[in-house]
Length: 126
Image (cartoon, rainbow, N blue to C red):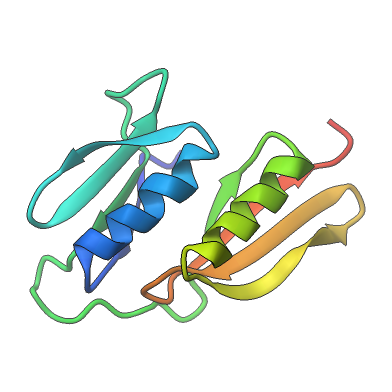
């Protein structure tokens, strides 16, 4: 079981601004920000942090993991579309427009402001 997910950034203020807006779509809100990280938890359970955006602990430049992807389950197709379009409007790069990728599975892909690959997905038949 996954406890939480963390992505690196080279500009914490820009990254938290990006994720504040994007993650609101899937009912996550920023519950803390320090000089080195921002943490996000469900609006209904602010103690249960699920996602962090952080500057690297070793103080080196944040880089993207080749083959690494963070995927967010989203409740419906319309919110996957909104998640994708919002990310693009906030400066993300399109890595694959929303659409059915496998029978009954709907995905979208973006690269955040630091190049981290982020996926939003849902199941169409649930």
